[in-house]
Image (cartoon, rainbow, N blue to C red; front, side, top):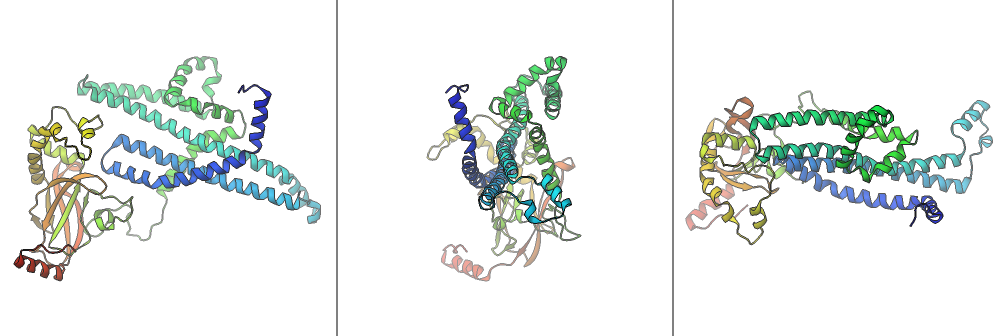
Length: 464
């Protein structure tokens, strides 16, 4: 249909008058869908942090923030649209505001007529605000998407430079530094033009040099999707300031709220990890009740251990492997496999397909790798070091790590302190306690009796 035709304009006018119904339907479905998607996004985001997946983490962080922005904006829209519908219903019952019937003094009557005015004007203003907020909700998402793409594009370029193998390590650092400086300057020009509502586009001299920068960032931020919305806002005196500063205000508000909170005790430390005087639920697997609760580096089965053994899980971190590779240069691969890349073995390792042949040389070095890992990282309970033998594994959230079982049969009942001792990257890799986790050992007598009986009958004891 020709957008210049009178029929199309009549159709648009009709749709504008009835758009509130579509707005409510879309807002309702969108809020429900976004609310449903929040928890899976947050879980994936936390898992990506624990697994040191930098790029995936940034993508999920952007998606989560965009979800919150859109959901909050649509909730405001629904509330305002509900107020508008209520005002329409009230107008049907009582019509206009009769200030003379209120019998206020002339001072209040004049003031109310000037500030409140006609009830129809109030309804008209609500209608304009609702439609603006609805459009602004999606514009904010595109703004956030643009910010994310600006960061990601530079991250992809640096990743390609690092992984290409075309340059030496020193040259790579120099190239990334130069590219980063130039890119940062270009982003500053873009940001200045944004907050000045197109200030660089108004001057003949600056617009000449800014135009290629504008086209470049317009391409990488997919501006063709939302550019008409932006300039439609900018040609309105009131709406343009809102559309420009709403996202910075949101980000500043988020930062402020992240620092603001309730402290219950003078001795409470926010975000404190497990120690000899504090237990964090992120170090006990039976307390990870929510999907967003994830293991923090090392985990024990529970605060109270009632069996004569205890499982210990150590989540993988880069510094763990770096310490192992420094001890044995033969374990250092010709090409570092860590990071993002295409893996044929990952595709072939589907259920029912054995793809171990593709990583056979790695499998042969795994025993030596685990042997060194066990020598470097030791388990200490109170003042005693315990025997252990690590194997590789993944936890219930598919986090890669190391697992072992510690014999507690000769341990006294009561409180004990678990420590993982090894090279600390924060202290030039000197041996130190990496984490401290308290637990209580109270062996279950019925389990021990059943175990003793099983030793006589050669039958394994039942799982508790």
